[in-house]
Length: 232
Ligand SMILES: Nc1ncnc2c1ncn2[C@@H]1O[C@H](COP(=O)(O)OP(=O)(O)O)[C@@H](O)[C@H]1O
Ligand SMILES: [Mg+2]
Image (tube, rainbow, N blue to C red; front, side, top):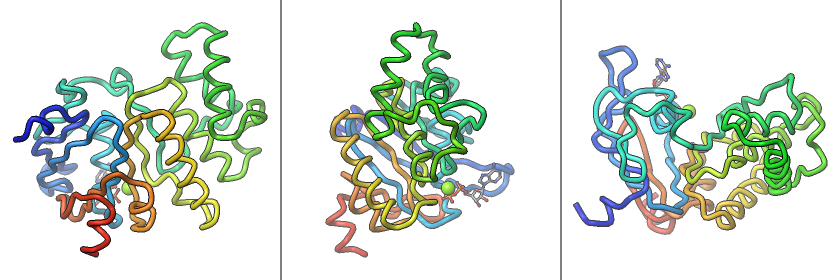
């Protein structure tokens, strides 16, 4: 294995996952994600993409194999200790809390003081152009705005790694393309490592440093977008 592989920020090593103890939905998953990289897992529905993200986030455990974050095996580290930002397929905002409170939540859990919370929340909301919306509840926002809140909430505690699971799936084409651009822009500005999941090939190719083409629980191809285009 090359030295750079050992140094990768995220490593999946021979990871398998079975939910029923019989069928493997992830069969032999090996992946290195470099620090600061935007890596996209591209694969059809049911291929095991969400399962892989959930294992990295810590909401599912691997049946076998190892997941390594920043040089440390995290198989036994609970999700809240992994310091990973997560944007889910549905936005998963708290409906009874305001936008401000939704963003303050992950900071309050980390016992941050009130003035720092206010500062971080306003910075994160500005990043997604929602500075004026802190007082609204999710139900008073459009789908696109709710999605921006979800992105801001994943970034607000300044994680080094952010996972995004088909975050733009519910948006119409125009808004989707605008948000692709904005997420890419945030990635470049913050230098954060992003593992992104989509079944949309053009989305994967426009946003990523590298694309992991994933099907049936295994990696089919791992390459830069221009290489994936030639193979497709
Ligand atoms: N919590 C679960 N319990 C049992 N089976 C699951 C669970 N989550 C996903 N699966 C199954 O695992 C396979 C992969 O699902 P998933 O990781 O959601 O794929 P994708 O995100 O690529 O659509 C599917 O066959 C799905 O039905
Ligand atoms: Mg999924």
